[in-house]
Image 1 (tube, rainbow over the protein chains, first blue to last red):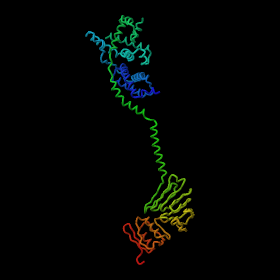
Image 2 (cartoon, one colour):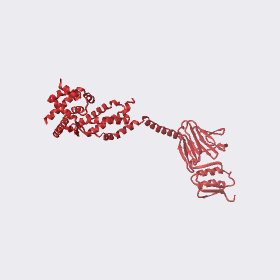
Image 3 (spheres, chains in turn yellow, green):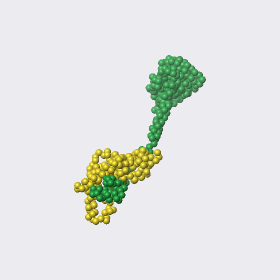
Image 4 (cartoon, helix red, strand yellow):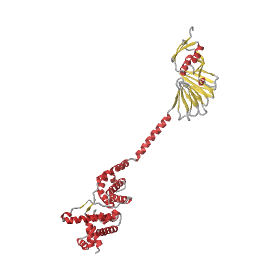
Length: 169
Length: 302
């Protein structure tokens, strides 16, 4: 019982916040593409966690946060058109390439960004969780409360519609 | 081998080199890999986690406050207030009610059982409102006239004695070590020292310093002071002048050799001159009034 109350201690709560806030924020950001909305939903999710700190064991905190944030997102009335902004690409491998290749690469990235915005929310979230967060299908399935098969399906759909979109442009 | 299966395996970072080769040989799957790799290199904006945490703080504090609240403490607060109120209420209730009249002031009022009390000037009366129904008992200093409703025993305590009655009308005069009880209706018992005297209607009793001074009949239906007159029957001049001092706000100096003169008669409470006259004339005295002091002395030639 004492263990369950850990999150109620401010230091512990702050630790949980440091561990998960970025992850949750990005998760919401993949869904809605709005930084402000992600800020709000993350805040709401952690406040909910604080209010329920006595009921949520430490090892369930992460999935609690995902679920709350996801529900809050689904409850938002206005689903705006998604415009994802990615600040920059990771420059790691680009340095060794020729300027022309860099330019082409940038153009390709731009296309992909637009295409990502046109994916359905479910496909985009699963796809970006896998690609950017590097999460395995099993983890995604757990976070989204769906089966691994469903994750596979979303990934395949996401890839094929991205390919179509890019080929079209 | 199923390319989709390999693709998912690759997406889960579990594909072997050979399997990746298989995928790359197919233009469709090669483009999937290119897209997937490009997306992997995208970077999301960085949220300002500190700002969000700071924005949350007020609400976290709110919660902390609520959490620390001891559910007992609010109950204790209510209980403490209640205790104070109840204690104060019982204390105030247990206090005696006291009625007082000043010089030249009369006051008629009802007791809790509707018994009527007329309190003469410069007198005080004390009783307990709360226990009145169980114990009709009051303490009197001065003079008062009672019309007692029928019920259990009604006691008037005076410094000189205790008067007990059962529904009657009687007057009690208890000033300066003297007690005079007039019973106008019913039966009154007067208890002093170890003596108990029963006064039927139409009798009066006087005590002076705890000794029976007078016990005789009279014929009046109510005391005269009720109609603003003090009457005396063979009273000492000192008693008369004291009563005069109770009815008028004056100081009296009497220069009389024989203070033990007796006075029978009455004086009014409404006119000082008239009152002084009614006292002085029969006793062959004269008086002078200066401001609030009255001097009484023997008539010249006496």
